[in-house]
Amino acid sequence: MQMQQAYEVRIAGFGGQGVILAAMILGRAVSIVDNKHATLVQSFGPEARGGACSAQLVLSEERVLYPYAKNPDLLVAMSQEGLRTYLDTVRPGGRLIYESDLVDVSSVPDDMAQFGVPATAIAESLRRRIVTNIVMVGFITAVGRVIGHDSAREAVMKSVPPGTERLNGQAFELGYEYGVEHYGRAQA
Image: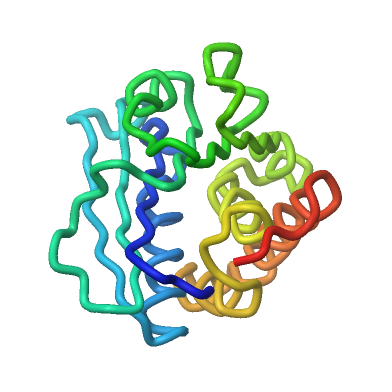
């Protein structure tokens, strides 16, 4: 990824969707694999599952001096509440990635680039809904202008529990392939 300036990302959903892990993987891909800079700030409600949850990343070639995403370049909405809460914060010309089976985008301005993926259904095709977030990471890699395929895949493999690498690798590739097939490969 060629970053001319800080690139802000917010991932929003509900507890249990793996929002925080998805953000950690993207941050790891940028900071550890690609040796650039990343910050991660996470927020979640008191509920273990089902409550509002979000993570914000600031990715940069240079040291990040302010860790909060004020006006994200990219919003990843994995729930309707996540879209409703954060849509107005996206910078003009920003991009939206969303879980197409869970998020209604009829309120999204036409001038915002939109990319939908049925991440939960894809994860269920692997008989493991728990990898929805990894499907989303693959999709973000394909269309989000955040990170390259090899860096993201390596970060996934280093971030998932031992013994789950094959399943998570499949989930990542299915999300990536869905993005390429439906939207083409975005130039990072």
